[in-house]
Image 1: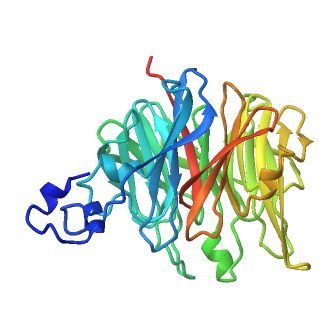
Image 2 (image 1 turned 180 degrees about the horizontal axis):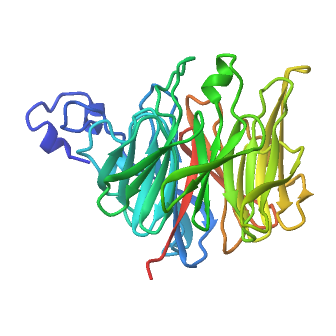
Length: 394
């Protein structure tokens, strides 16, 4: 932050709130907040967690928060809105709608959907390195020095003429686009197994215009960057993650009317090709896999009762069975208004849930101990949704 003396050397009578504005084109810079969570700090190789707040579409309010897990203090500290404070010269800060947050090597990658860009910063302190311009970008994953970014390609407000989606290949060192490949309509999350990239196609824009949702996963050969096949799974695919057994777990959102949300697993056949193994009639809106445990929360809308049912639980990825339909019995979990993200500490198995509240004001991050006991909660930016752990540099 610049001081009053730098920004306003003469006008001493101007209102105090001007102190919070930067000297760059009168753009308001919201100061970083340091919040003591009161939670006990436990030292490990995980020293922090970045949380990307989406911000409501069109509001240009995507923000980045940071949870200090280094153990340097007796309690953990949560820092709200660090990106603006650490990058004061970046016009409009992060931009419009944060859609994914990942760390690869020493760099932090932030996918900003409606601003059509991927921001890249130092993972150690979130100081900006540069950006990659990608239209209507959605998710990012990595392998062998390259980032793969899914893109709707078309505008954010889809129409019947929306083009096929694409996956862009980006050099993680130079931030230059190296290649691209067309996939299905409105591709979402991706996962890599071996030398193949698996892309969940949603067909979200097509579904909204009455043409029907996509139901396929595109398979991309990473060596040739070409689509080799499509695997038919279910309508309106969203998340896809690989487990330690080489399986893929894919969420399907259905059509929001007579097709309910489900989760599917894909397995490799004798030739190493992915094939559908089965599914569970369990709504899964977001998930995080640690070991054999797939932690999830799911929201299921019912047209019949006009109600939204939320469940939290764990699926055993080895047995393909729901272990529990309740991650926590703590009363605080029942107070969550709109769950919007989940992440699990891979070392200690404590977990975090993100509550978007009413979508237009500050959300909350809630921390639970491994046994499901509620620990603490803090105020976040608008629509907290995506998080990634920062590990100590070896």
